[in-house]
Image (cartoon, rainbow, N blue to C red; front, side, top):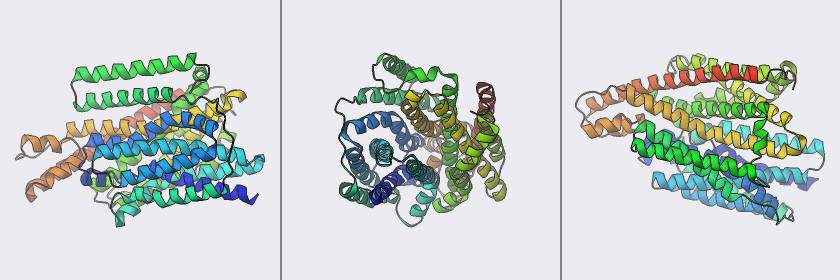
Length: 495
């Protein structure tokens, strides 16, 4: 009995840095932009490569765990996570950090299914297993919610690489304790891993997102952007075709034919897009425009973190009493309302108003996430519960990655169009300052004080306008989705 709970402590310890790393860079974005001299596009890739890689790798890594046992998978994943953390902490360029973050995601994709498999294997009593799963879920939501605060606290006192270095002693402790306390398991050598399918999905997603960024920012020719989009779309179609024909697919595509499950997936992706995208944009506005420190920016965003972290029990009661349809549509609708409210809020003077809207956003978006989970798991046949859970996990991670990409694209496009730069800049300086607010800061540091101040005022004005526009567009999209969910979940009042 004692060994079970000690093992749970190891599992929780392994999961904490994985959860925190999903959001820890949100408040570090301005610091990274200046420290590594990254462009706005590179910054987006640094942040969202983690979730996009996890979305594609978590399912084959779960199969690998069945093949080699969850203990070996946890040890291997933790070792990779620790080494990638070291590489990320001492990155000398944006490309170096992107590759390190991708490796971090592979390690995380090994750790997550290993922790869940460990709980399922060690806790045979249903009541104890539910308690253990509750602890695991609380660590996941709490770690992701407080990631920006942890990152801000570290950046307040140490260099930016410290947000990765803190993983190393945790990983060393996990490896030592797991080798000592965790029981060995007999794997199933016949279990297929489907790594090729995962790489196909990841490549398709990266090509589609890269082509969208390139088309909007003009980084490559329109013809090349279109060619990349076609390649990504074709690869995605090939992936879907492969999954439908495979005897043991990575993704059970037949589940997507169920209207409620498909609606739940769309809602999970959208809710994560809203939460993650908002946190990233908010962190940049607070620091670049309103001169918050990373830690004070994390503190300012605490309401959305707390509301999303503690909404689970309340949202569960609401689903039971009001029904899935009401909570799903209401969660999306109130998220839209909060975006509209935040789009007209002055974060320098209207603090209480901002905190109120952020609390509503955190609670409503997290409630929609719970409703999506309920929709997916309740509608899936019992014999396909594991496959449905895998789809849910992918939807969460994909939504997190897309949140960074979509909000980043909206922001960068509108910023470039909205900024009105002062005269006196060279063509190169003007192009840099109009690229992103981070680039504008770097350009201003090389100018004489009066011109530098004028450039920063123009950049702040453009960024505030762009942030408001992005929130308004996102709010409109969420409002439309709320109406779609209302009709999609018709007839499922208590389910």
